[in-house]
Length: 372
Image (cartoon, rainbow, N blue to C red):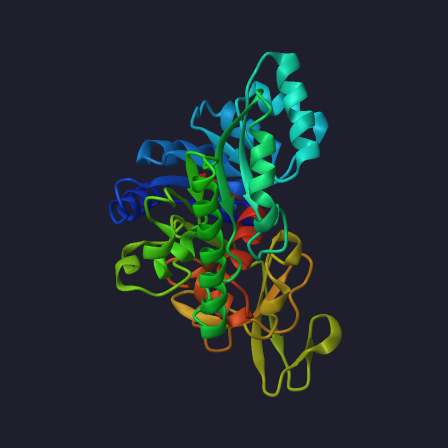
């Protein structure tokens, strides 16, 4: 048995995708966010399931991820959401990928490579409306697009931007999100007036589709990028999203048991000290396998239908939990780190993190992965 096991329910994933798509405007396209190894769920199997469930295209972060998708015989269009290096361009063009572009210098080098290969380079222009990461500023985007249209080896398929706090229900953050969307729509109106508007336009992510559907889905915004919601974790609360279910379950095992006397410390730094006689269990997972250190002295796992609190720091290879009030714990017992009884978004709240900050590292750090 592996020290930790990620179980990925592809049937639930397919049902989530079909359900969410059924609630969207029929004229909007759907990009499935498969980046970071499909949020740790496994990009090859997940991409195939997404294709079968009816998504229009995939979004990945790196060339390596795109190669894995193509090696899995998935022929859907793939948008590389992050910049790539010049020595990766040939492979990207050979695979028929769509690249994000935000500066003219790279675009010209890309066009030269495409021309030498006798290909068209498909691109989406990335616009920074307030994320502060990649992207051309809105005031410079029209000029960039005008210059890009002069490069015949480029096929300008889309323009997009990223929202930074769409998952927040804080009024200040909601105002900021609306301002990002408004800034982007203003740009799109200007591009349309200048006859520069690309076919695809997108800014909506999972959280925005939940909180701002009327703003991020419209005739001018005709594509959405959905990840977390498909994986079963709504980042905002609305009645219709209650039907989606978590796709992944992470389990481990008890490898040792120990009794504590009053005053005994647990783990590095002595951040936990027993006040009474206690019994602890040691689990073979830690921050080296993606368990967040933020769960120290605040997280919980499930053993034998009872909850066991984390005590002490999360260690490199181990996590220690208090089983004083858990019945009949033995070495070898299965432990649910997150899953149907301990949802990952609940774990995230314990740690003060987003669900992706819990879900992705832990799934990518699992010793084994099985599909159901």
